[in-house]
Length: 133
Image 1 (cartoon, rainbow, N blue to C red):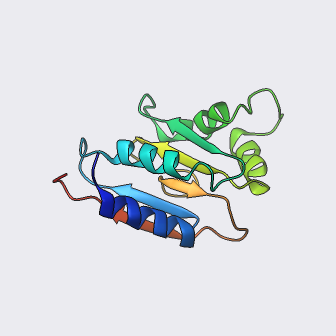
Image 2: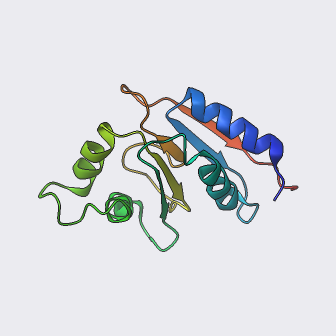
């Protein structure tokens, strides 16, 4: 897989921002690119990388449950999935890759590769992928 420029741009953005969103038409390789970058960066994040496939969801309201499941949080808290995920990620340096977020309003922040490396409000960046590979 090529996309050397895009991989470099995303890695740079992840070093500066807690939230990076890959945008572009369906089928151009956003998920493949995110997985490749996550693989390349796994040693940078002491608490690892977690890939959360969301393609089977019909509504955005299921996103927190899907993330909680991918992080192995079900049954570990009596709180909502959203609260459990936020509490879990607060003290960790982890790359969370969300793929194929369903259409519609999203609870919380925009989709993308988000890192919990620094405290404070998430800042976001977006990378629009060109159609040609």
